[in-house]
Length: 85
Length: 85
Image (cartoon, rainbow over all chains, first blue to last red; front, side, top):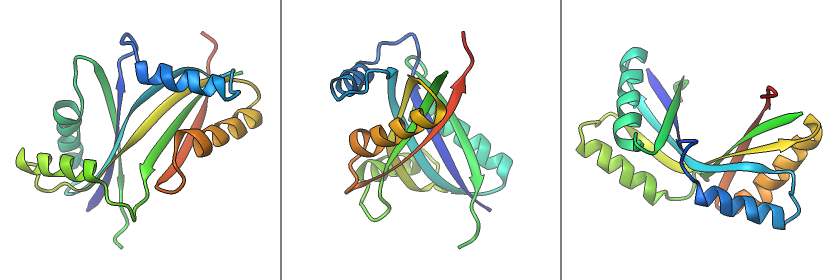
């Protein structure tokens, strides 16, 4: 079975997010004063073959060990089966 | 009401994703040969106050006009109500 994994990597809440601050200031300057707490992170999509449990374990490994830095970042992922083309 | 908006910005499928290719090669070198079609994008969270319909319209505007480049990028977003702290 083919699966699409969606991985979301964000800075931990305790860590200052300069990129988020910059975007927030820019939004305020462009008239979106009601926006706050802007956080900017990475969104990664990847496709894998295999059984669901095996794919889930592999994506967890990839997400936690390669795609994110556990010291500064939080990571979560979703997996969805892809219909054969 | 307070809403959390989650915005996902990815390169359009027709556009080469060098960052995705680099991540894919690195995953293959580290033993994850079954991974393919790696795409790297931006994930942005922002908090807004207001009525749902109004917030949705504002987030659509922000997503399409400020947080993404319509020529090269696709954008989608989700909105969820935040429970008062």
